[in-house]
Amino acid sequence: MPHDFPKLNAFPVFMKVEGEVVVIVGDGEEALAKARLLGQSSAALRIVAPDASQDLLDWISANHAAHISHVYARAHLAGATLVFAASGDEELDRRVVEDARALGISVNAVDRPELCDFFTPALVNRAPVAIAIGTEGAGPVLAQMIRARIDRMLSPSLGTLASLAVGFRDAAERLLPKGLPRRRFWREFFEGAPARAVAGGDVSRAHAAASAMLGNPERNFGHVALVGAGPGAEDLLTLRAQRLLMEADVILHDALVPEAVVAMGRRDAERIAVGKRKGCHSKSQSEINALLVELGREGKRVVRLKSGDPLVFGRAGEEMAALREAGISYEVVPGVTAAFAAAADFELPLTLRGVTSSMVFTTGHDLKGGSLPDWAKLAISGATVAVYMGRSVAAEVAGRLIAAGLSPDTAVAVVENASLQGCRRFHGTLADLPALEERHDLTGPVMTIIGDAVAGADFSRSQALAAVPSRQRVSEEAAP
Image 1: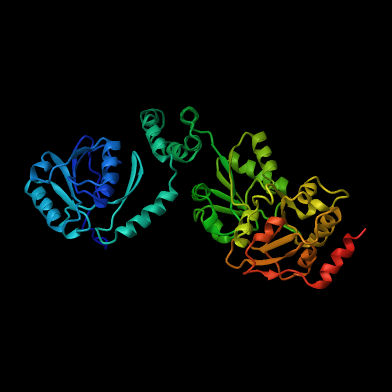
Image 2: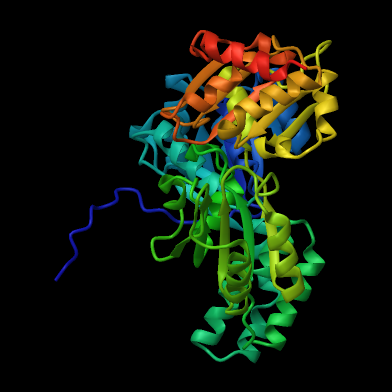
C-alpha cells in the first residue's frame, strides 16, 4: 500500500562541484549573496559583473573568484556546470536563463521561481556535514528561519569531528563486529569523549579517546555535565546546555528549574528530581554525589541541571570532587546567575563608572554569624551586593549592615522570579528591607541587590518595598 506522503516538486540532492565552473551574472546585492553562498563550496566561481559594486569587488578579490568585467554574453557561460541569473534586471535574467538552457546548463534566476531549474537552499555548513533547507522558492525567509534554528542546535565543531571520524572508519570495521558494538562505538564517538575533546579544540585528545574506545569496546564511558539552567526563562539557556540536554540519558534537576527547561531533554531521558528548598530536601547532597558517580559508572550521559550558574551557591564543588575521586569524566556549563537576571529585569547596572567598580555575591545567611564577613567592608566602601536566599533574614541583613556603617538610605532593589513572565519588582532603601519578611505572598526565589548603583535603576515598573513601621524598627535595631 503506497504511503500518503506529500509530493516534493523539487527533490534535494547534493551535487559534486569541486573544481567545477559555476557562473553568477549580476553586479549588486543579489549577486553578492549568491557568491557568499557558493563561496562555501569548492566550485570555481566565475562572476560576470561589468558594473560590480565595491562590496562585490572586495569579495571577488578576497575569495580569488574569476571576474569578467565585460557586458554579459552567452560565451561567458561556456564550460559551466551551474548558472545563476542574479542581475535584478528581468530582461537580462530571462536572457541568461534562455542561454543556459540552450547550452544544456541548469540555471537559477534569483527571486524568479518560474524561471528556475533548481532552487538554492538555506545552508547549515559544518563541512563535510551540510544541511540544506528548501521551500521550492515559496518562502526563502521561512527557510532562513529554519536554518537558524538548526544552526543553533549543532556544535560549531561538528565538521571537525566528522572529518576525524573518516580516519577511524576502517579500524572500526576491522575491529568491531557489525550491529550493536559498532553502533555503540560511533554513538560514543559523536556524543562522548571524542566529541567533547573536539569541542574544546583538542583534536589530539579526541584521537586518543577514540583509540581508547576501540581498544576497550566493552568499557562504559559515562559522563556528567554540571549545567547551569539559568534563572528560569528557557530562552536564557545556553546553546551548549540545550545540546547536552538533548543528548542526556538521565537528567538530575533542582527544584527551582522550571519544567519547560527540563522538558528540553529527550522524551525518553530519565528525570530525577533532587531539589533542595528550605525545609524540604528530596535528596541530601551526599546522596546526589553518590548518584552522579553511580550513573557515570553505568556509562550514562548525565546532566546535573542546576538553577542559575552551577558554580554560584550550587554546591558544584562537592559534586566535582566526588566525580574526580571516582574517575568519572565531567564538564561544567555556565548559566546566567539570578543576580544578572534580576539586574536586567530592573535595568540597573551592577557596576557604574564613578560610583562602584566591584560587586559581592552572598547569601542572607552569611550575616547570621557572630562577626561581620569580610565582604561587609566592601559594601560599606561602595560595592554592589547581590543577596541570594535572603527574604527570611532581610531584617537581620539590613540591621547588621546599617550597624556596620552602611547608610540606611542606600538603594535596594528586590526581584521575585527574575527573568520569568510573572516576575515582581520592589524598590526602596536598606532601612525598608525588613518589610520583605512580611511579604508572605512572595513564594518564588527572591534576589536582593543593595548599593548606590541601584539608584540608577528604572523603578517605573516596580512597587515601593516598605512601610513606615518597618523603617522605624530597623533604625531602632541598628541603634547602639
